[in-house]
View 1 (cartoon, helix red, strand yellow):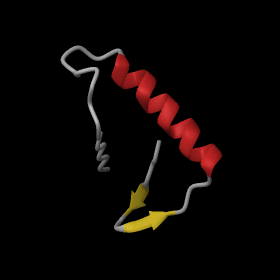
View 2: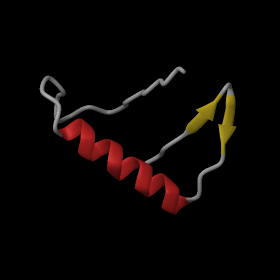
View 3: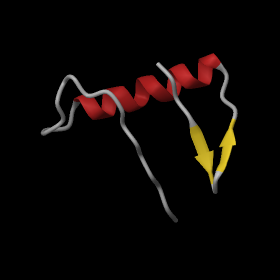
View 4: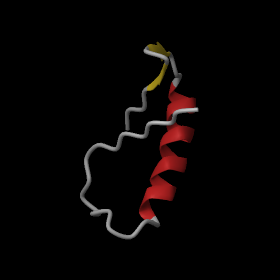
Length: 49
């Protein structure tokens, strides 16, 4: 699993542990959503404030 964090256009380096934690949390959330195919390949989440 590869996880990237980009803040205001700058990629923030993530070590394997942080990638694993982020990925696991996101996978858990997505797996509960109706309408998401089980075979998905890429998920993009964008947050603006």
